[in-house]
Length: 129
Image (cartoon, rainbow, N blue to C red; front, side, top):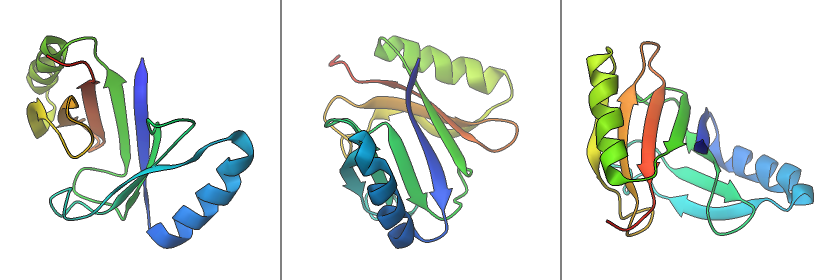
């Protein structure tokens, strides 16, 4: 159901150190770093996980896309497209049209909307085509 979740942090360096230490006993480690340039100016992001795929993300500062980010797993790209259309029809605001996000991995296909409270809600499919 939930693919990953992210929260905004005030000091990404301090948060990196905190989460790296706090999550280490659980076998969770920093698995991916995405620069502010790669996010188009929406802050740097650090992804933590048990293996290669991050499931918990922290991002620098509160951005226009809200302080909380939740991504729901979608079985196909068509489901991502349908999520985006339904969310917009239900009153959500577009925060990233359906499409590939190769900065995460070559088959990362996601769509983003802001819910009525400004939280960044995503549907993502990791399968090729």
